[in-house]
Length: 247
Image (cartoon, rainbow, N blue to C red; front, side, top):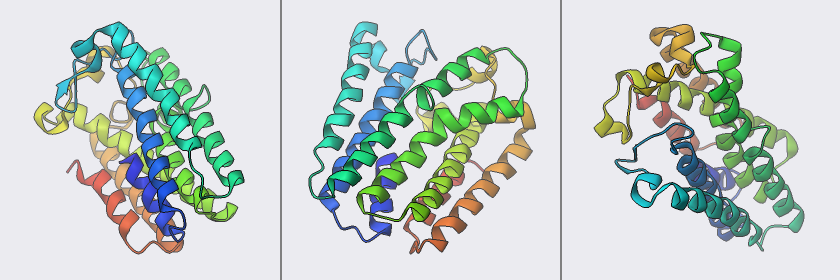
């Protein structure tokens, strides 16, 4: 999904460097894959399945999973650095955006806060902090990287990434709901873990009905932003898929 967001953001601004956009889409997917491999490890979420198959550490051992994640993270930056059609300055901005997103202030920081919040009770401010970093940041960056390589304006980039943050938050809220009400066959990973581990989630803070409504509102706002930027319906379709995963 994040790779497709990157491609569609590049197309939104004219698709001037499609080869670079494809490299960037691969880069964000490699980074996301690394984060999932590490998140599934026993020291973190201890998930046995991912996308309907055994998690990496179940199939290849913990050492293999740690090394695979490390390799994927490094490869993400190597692939993005191969972009050669877009202006070098834009490639540098894209690299900086991916690096910032992957680090302590966003993806890793969100994961740390998620672990620290276990069994600490409901706190809407804290769960928003976690979701924005753990999930929202990489979705926003996927869009931002594609748009940056296309040479969009700073104002358009900011608005597009705001929409990505909103979609990322909606995506995580839906994930939290699916952990409570979904089926493992449909979702492709183990469920009912959040309550057992005392995870701080949007439903635990606000309830299921309010969480569904919040997700719908976030998607609606995000769609409004990309329509104003000239989206012909491609991003709107992808954004609606986020909420369509739960009734």
